[in-house]
Amino acid sequence: MSDSQYIRQRDNTTEHGQTRDLSYPPLPEALTVGVYDNHAHLEIADGSNPLDYREHLDRASAVGIRGVIQVGGDLETSRWSAEMAAREPRLLAAVAIHPNEAPNYEAAGTLDAALAEIDELASRPRVRAIGETGLDFFRTDEGGRAAQFRSFEAHIGIAKKHDLAMQIHDRDAHGDVIATLLRVGAPERTVFHCFSGDAEMARLCVDHGWYLSFAGTVTFKNAGGLREALAAIPRDRILIETDAPFLTPTPFRGRPNSPYLIPHTLRAMAEHLGTDVSMLAAQVSSNTELVYGSWDAEPVDRPL
Ligand SMILES: [Zn+2]
Image (cartoon, rainbow, N blue to C red):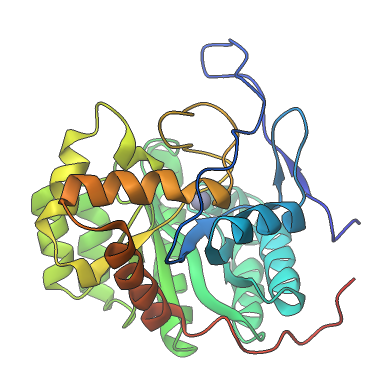
């Protein structure tokens, strides 16, 4: 167990079997006004020279990234996220069983035990969100969906019980995610991680008081609909994230992602909105602190 290192390894081939460019992109020009990364998986090693979480955070600090939400997707990564946030001032944690993992736990007969442990982790210091949870009809077929719904509803309950924010994973399941939130009652601070809907859905989310977090996908050439969604909502609903090591922004699409690459996404968003980068950064930082609270509280564990 190396808790200062990564605990997962990314598959380094593309879906079509070609190899990716496995080098980390260079550091972008630093931001004048910093932002937070709403969603990253720093436990996953990627690239030819993997960075450990402190290297990710040091590079992020160097370009003005103020902090990161480290997100778990199963028990092992959720425990790791809570432990790292407890000792690293630049991290807060989110814990959950990912919608694509829920059917596996259910099949093994361990979903209830797993949900009970997420409930326990939710009470740890510097765990500020339940996530990522939600629905994924892209990777999970009919057979696994009952477990996804059950797990999603349980996570909504855990977030409300602990008064934590919630990070939604919604892939090809917009209608059912929204219907579930409305039926069960969404937590007070609900964030769509890597928002992937259109302008109409964005307006609907905002009408319900939810936040939308934009990832590197908003910089992609074919993502006109996503940029329309960005422009359709009030600025006080916008968050930003990497989903590192995935979804690297233009012009480095396909290479390993890291929180230090957020400036590319932020600058593209500001340009599309026709606004000043620093003004947008200040707004997004303020939004992020409203959702998760402050990163400043002292970590509870000794550094390694
Ligand atoms: Zn994620």
